[in-house]
Length: 407
Image (cartoon, rainbow, N blue to C red; front, side, top):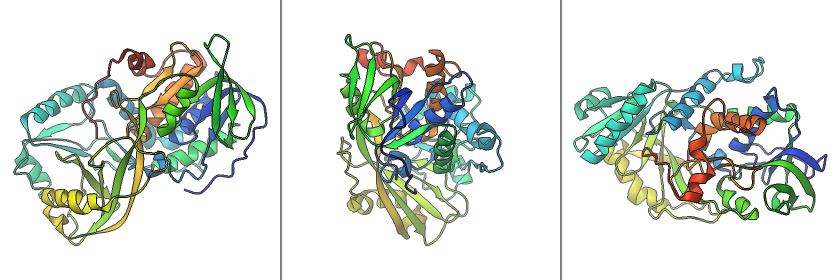
């Protein structure tokens, strides 16, 4: 992703909204807020690295699925699918806005034990009630539709070819940034080093930049991705979000599959999918999945050689002869409480807004989140979708919002 030429300083010393973090979530909020007919304020986005080289956004697999276990996550993804397929319309209809395509090769969850099979059945009931096209498949049915799988150990699969798959997430991101700036949103290359609260600590009064300026803020939005806990800590708030490393490999096969590969969630925990016409993508967490340093993007090729490749070659024997063409490591902004987002205002510091902890779901949830946070800032209430279940109150009370379909 090409670097953006953002200035280091602001044009004013006071903004109605200061968004900390200009990647996919921050830019979605900025865009939706700039387009809200009832919002007339000034918006500042503070981004520490406008190249976005190491942002989670730039290292995402850029997919969307409806196969969640909770109604709210399903509805969020359904809006994303609608948004992607009608991107130009949602962006105002200008001919220069590109059309986006949702390549619906689908997701395929594979269960090799009865407990997980029963969970897939329960999930499918929720999904079907909301109009998702998920269908449960026996091993022989999976084999008939996708003969390349080895399914002797599989009890059940869950598959959906309706509005699940890949889209150009970085194109959406780029147009949000470009259009937000055109609409008057100010982006700067800087970093927040302090948040100053009012005397009673009930509001953020100002933010301090690394260059020394102090900016008055009406509302502060934490969209800092894996660094969200550090930003919250500046306001004396604990937030259970940390950077977790995720590995991705792109590879070609000596004998390509004869049909598109769904994004397959293997019982081992690895996943793989189609990547373009002839290549494939595989992803995996490290074998010890713990917090890492913000600047730790080192790859461990032993994981590929000793763990991932043997597993995908077992599941798809045609993948015994493959060649890795590229690879990278990225970070999840991982919510250690329940792997779900934290959205909305802090109960005590009322103008500090969370948009954090997406745990790998940020890009696919960004349209609904941008719309929702913009509605909250403008009207003080959730409107299009009720995000109350994602509030910080559950964090403070240590009451997880359980999502059973996590990759």
